[in-house]
Image (cartoon, rainbow, N blue to C red):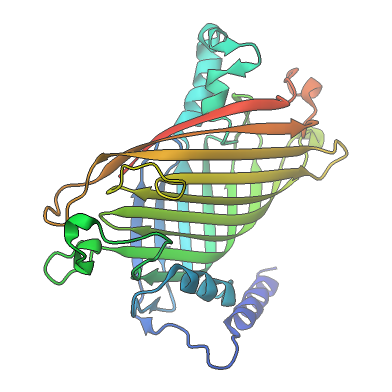
Length: 342
């Protein structure tokens, strides 16, 4: 089994490393390893990055289109391995409220709307572990990395101010990767109830983020398959596709359809006999609290975010009667997702 896996990995690497004549892969540097800790109400994680075959040179500043082009050309190039352990605090809290404070849970129900569900339905498990293998880039964002970027007027057109330079150090950086992800867990959440069913997901993903003192930009495009090891296959396998993009402009407080905006869309399709479909769409805005300053590197920018959306389900992906009389998914439910960004 391992022999075939290694052969397949080698073949994928050879194919994804192919590029048209004239294409130049980024220069290799020394092996790169790092830990990354992210704390958030919805998604908290610790990641370990390693590039066993060397790391890519940051090189000259890269435009956003260049990042997509490079990742798509060498989608599965096995340049990096990322191990992640993640925990979803609000999803766990919703389960705790329903389990140990059910009267409070029901008091937060108004008609078909439940506040706890609205805050927690975006995640289907309390925690997860994942392994990523694929292409990985560390890069320096170029001017105008996202459409509409410009140095703040307070910097008098100084491009160094846009990159928040302290001395000769550019404090604007980007990380992006594309490849295959294997995710698993030993429990799952349905309607804010915890079930001891192991599950496994396999997906291909293109993801990245750019962080500077003036703005954060993240994007995530994925296609995946989910299998739950439930008794008598009570829960259907799923296919899904998702696209998410969030842009935080700490220096801008004016209203804009582009600046300080989040868009997240996902479609799920059940593979069983129930003809299950689920559609999820979320839009949000960010509201900067602390305005950044290139002159004061110690002044950390911050913003609160508020997103609203909905989920719409057709039929059910599980047999509720044999799952402790679990109710089917709501045909329609509003979503609220507050957050804070630094």
